[in-house]
Length: 287
Ligand SMILES: Nc1nc2c(ncn2[C@@H]2O[C@H](COP(=O)(O)OP(=O)(O)OP(=O)(O)O)[C@@H](O)[C@H]2O)c(=O)[nH]1
Ligand SMILES: [Mg+2]
Image 1 (cartoon, rainbow, N blue to C red):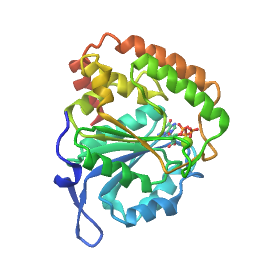
Image 2 (cartoon, rainbow, N blue to C red; image 1 turned 30 degrees about the horizontal axis):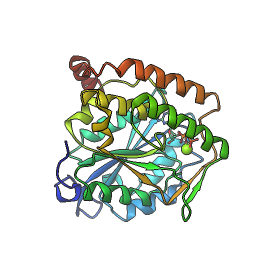
Image 3 (spheres, rainbow, N blue to C red; image 1 turned 90 degrees about the vertical axis):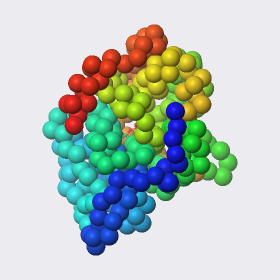
């Protein structure tokens, strides 16, 4: 399933403000909804200034605050390595990420695409660490940040979120048949592969736990064999994760998420391949 190490391949070429070529080995999608107050302009600009070869695609869909203006401040001077996708109607994080990743796949020839929460609960420094794993491990197609509270790390989560998260992860492990520790961390990278397009082709049924639906789709594509998908994933215990105030997730969403996991399990358990006709149609819409 895997291909060459990401850094060894020719990726999308563009040019920076000095006319010098910039090579993008990866594209990172940042979904943003009413993030005007939480967006850390300095942190994003510092990351962009280091020219890591990572293109950042922000996806705003109908924010009612000054998110777009703040994003424009982030991107000023880095137009070659950033893009702001604006959707009029709010459709939720899942659809914003899906649209952003499909857009990223159609820009040049990225070897890796992923998504990252705008609040930078996972700092951008971790992007390089996740990329390095994909470089070093050609057998791995997905690297997920994982919030494991080990000694010597800074993983600050509210206790209630931590314990609900553990219950949720257990339910997911049983439902999918994959021994995964943390499905919901908003820091994930994927190696570009034809299967990834297929996985992203149709809208997700869940607005929040689409991460699980991505896994369910991979399992379906792998002949309903969770063990094969398990071998494609690397969970990276993050050095730092900080709960940033202003999350849009509410306590009742825990129950919605559990019911979504059940719906996902029902929909994908037959292991059928995704409908190619529907996939082609949605790809056309997304472009
Ligand atoms: N474009 C877009 N982005 C969204 C939408 N809803 C949430 N997001 C983004 O999804 C990311 C995660 O949102 P958070 O509110 O931090 O929630 P979370 O990280 O899933 O949950 P926490 O564990 O509480 O942090 C952020 O970047 C949000 O801006 C939406 O409807 N549209
Ligand atoms: Mg968050």
